[in-house]
Image 1 (cartoon, one colour):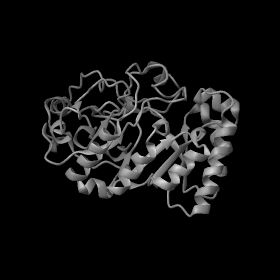
Image 2 (image 1 turned 45 degrees about the vertical axis):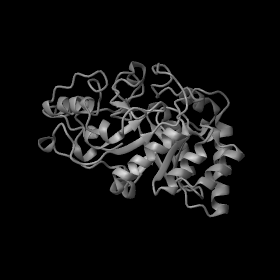
Image 3 (image 1 turned 120 degrees about the vertical axis):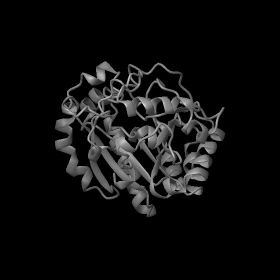
Length: 318
């Protein structure tokens, strides 16, 4: 996906509970509602938090605070407008994209092509997100249903994506389009069949195999799916995760989270309707989390089961 998503490496010996640099926002959750029932997503069977839509005013505040606090981040990084939901369900998703663009932010979304009805495509082309990651697993209705949990939906998803690509090319849109498939056993046949098909398609800037994720490690059904995690062989002498020193995630209701893997709001740092993001960035909750990482004694419910705590620094990315 490019260097925009690689986090700055902060060696363990240089970390302190208080960050001396401004915050970044990795992602903003426009909604946690979604029509999909994906087998590899903890949202399907494990997310119990309330569902809703972020208010446009709260969204504006998040963008404005980021632009004011960290121009370097804005100039060099993407801000993803999704978390655990389908952002195209938000009634003002186009306004959210356009507002970010107007402030110099590079918004990106991961979306399901089944949502790409004609009017939705029109809004996307007008609002001009920097990047769209089209998640399309499977190669027919049966394989799609097994992974994404919706019957008779592959054909529509495929045709909608083809329509979007044709309109993108015709309009000479500069939106970067990534087509992705989750790299795990249930998708092997589909990846073999479809990789070259999407990679050659006009309007697609890149096709990728998206790494399988166990998220925060607390969704047992997801963790039980066949995957290639090598975390049991990692050096566990020091936590290598850098996220509490780099970025935050904002849920639809304004809750600020330390990690985009936090699907259930297990570790809330604060709420941006009550505090500024800069205050939350060095507040008591996040400093407590950083101390756990520094002392290599991670006991909080969000992080203690995460496969990424000890990932080699050179592999750290989201």
